[in-house]
Image (cartoon, rainbow, N blue to C red; front, side):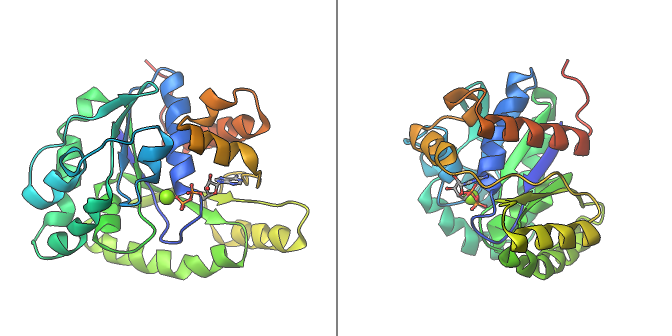
Length: 253
Ligand SMILES: Nc1ncnc2c1ncn2[C@@H]1O[C@H](COP(=O)(O)OP(=O)(O)O)[C@@H](O)[C@H]1O
Ligand SMILES: [Mg+2]
C-alpha cells in the first residue's frame, strides 16, 4: 500500500477535490482505495454523500486514544474514514501527547495488506492534524494554486517539510499539481512558468472550470460518477494518470 497525503496549508488549493476524484478513478480502475478525511470541516466526507459520521468513526480514536483505525465506510466503491467537526478537538490533545503525531502512520501500516493506496485529505492549516497526515505518508502530493497565492504558500510548505523531516527524513513530495489554471490570464501563465522553473515534479495544470466541481460536491458524488465524459472528468483522468506515475502505482492486480 502506498500512503499519499494531499497537502497544502492554503485553503482552496484543490486538496479535497483531488482526494475524492483521483481516489474514485483509482478505485474504478480496480485498485483497493482507502480515503482518510483529516479536515474537521469534513468536506471530503460530505462531498462523498456521508452526513452521519460521528467522532468515533474519525481518526480521533487513533490520534488521541492510540487505538487502531476505525472501520471505514464503504461509499462509491471506496473505503472512507470520515471526519466530523468535533475532530478539531484533536488538535490540542495531539500536541499534549508525546508521539501522538505518529499514531496514524502506525494504524495505516496495520491495514496495509487490505489496500493498494491510501489518500489522505489534509486540513487547511499547519497544525497537529496536518502533521498527523503528513507524517503518516510515504509521499506528499501538493496542489498549488496557479496564481500569486499559490506562490506565496511555497515557503510555508518548505518550512513545514523541514520540520516533518526531523521525524520522517525519507518523506518526499512526489508531485506538485498546479490547480485552478486559467490559461487566458497572463498572470496564470507567468505563475505556471515560475512553478515549472522551481518545482522538480510538476503535473500538467488542472484548468479552472466552474459548475461541475460544485454541482458534483452538492450531489455527494465524484465527477466520474456525476458527469462521466465531461471536460472536468477528462481533467480528473489526466490528473489520475499523473498521480499513478508519481506514486509508481503500476497496473492494478
Ligand atoms: N479545477 C477546478 N475548477 C474550478 N473549481 C474547482 C476546481 N477544483 C476544485 N474546485 C472547487 O474549488 C473549491 C476548493 O477546492 P477544494 O478541493 O475544496 O480545495 P482545498 O481542499 O484545498 O481547500 C471547491 O469548491 C471545489 O469544488
Ligand atoms: Mg479541503
